[in-house]
Image 1 (cartoon, rainbow, N blue to C red):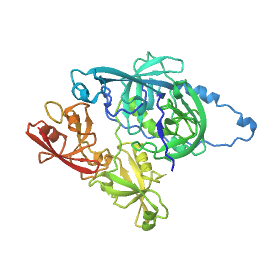
Image 2: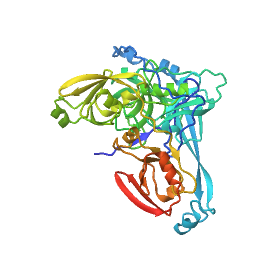
Image 3: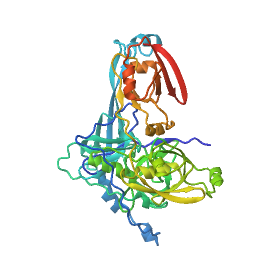
Amino acid sequence: MAMRTVWFVAAATAVVIGGGAVITTLATNPNASAPPAVPGSTPIVSTAIEPQPPVERVVPKGQGEVLLSFAPVVKSVTPSVVNVYATTISQQSASPFGNDPFFERFFGGNSPFSRSRPRKSQSLGSGVIVDAGGVILTNHHVIDGATDIRVATTDGTEYAVDLVLDDPKTDLAVLKVQDAGGTAFPAVQFADSDQLEVGDMVLAIGNPFGVGQTVTSGIVSALARTGVEPDSYEFFIQTDAAINPGNSGGALVDLQGRLVGVNTAIVSRSGGSVGIGFAIPANMAKLVAETGVAGGSLVRPWFGARLQPVSSDIANSIGLGRPQGALIAEMAPGGPADQAGFRDGDVILAVDGFDIDQPSAFDFRLATKQVGASAVITFFRGGREASITLPLTAAPDAGAPVSISGNTRFAGTTVATVTPALAQELGLGFDTRGVVIREVERNSPADDLGLRVGDLILSLNETTIADAESFERIANDRPRSWRVVLQRGGRTIRAEIGG
């Protein structure tokens, strides 16, 4: 089977959604820290997507209709699409002896003889204005790790922007113009992406390869696509409208000029468009944008169960008829699913009337709901269908991550307490206990020790680690040696090191 490559289409186009905030995505930087909270902000959840009446679809009846132009739609939408320029400055050590392995041992890395030089890199993408106050939506991978972000509107005016919300899970980010000067920006209108159908015509607007704002047309090729970005909510709109590097964060609009998706990735062997592009549905983008406009933080509902696809064998064995839905394989004891009355082996078929064909569809539907609301979940059990109204609640709070510093072998790490929700995110059992390493500073004692992001620390010096606070307390002891038990990649590692 031929190998395929999934490319992020950074070189960003942004859509302004209002309030001077811009959402954008750039190249991923695992060392980037979360953006500072907006002063006075509180965690909020976006309002639910308002259902919209279906648009009547008509096949062209003659040559005259075929020759109709997209120009009116383009003129109304392009002012809402911006170019996003992200600059990243990092420090790069340079040894006076080049890369000679012998001298690198003594003059590289943290050596006082090593020269640190700033390294500047730039990324270009697109964004969409979603609020008249200067709020812009773009891809996370466009702005990830950026130290300076600017946007340029269609008239060439440049604005410095602040990153007010960054959400790697959806690959979306929200930016806001720092000094709008009273300017009312042209914000795009959101469509209800659930009304899209395969075959609908769409336009993609962005800045491919940095050549300038470009419009391409195509159709919706497929819906609810998966296998594109495994770490995100996979429920992509697929289109054959040409999307290229630089289109990331740009707008995918319908023929009414409404935003139906945010362009984010392509499948390509060459890096250019081959007619397989992907966009994040507008209903997901709207939730992120509204949260950014309000200056809050995203809080999503947690189901508290691990799901798996339903194979043909499973469907036949339980009398389901055909492979469909999401099978509950494991539940967190006392979690929302457990409390609502679900059981292991139940097959979820629909959420609020929307069919669920696979676990990713359920994750998407739940992620676009509001904490504090409820969802009607239809499921299959014992040969029958039934429904449960599930109150939507957030995952239990594990407290803030703890950073380790000072004179200790573990200095440079940031750890978080493993909760059932975090265990699910990491692919661990719900009963897992310990702390997981979230960050490791480069060239820190912890980095020299060989600790990695994702390591699960189980015990130190025969003491079980229950939470981040206990890890911090024990890590700052001064023993002659350390006995460390950790889990990495499904393997348990035991090591003894000097204190």
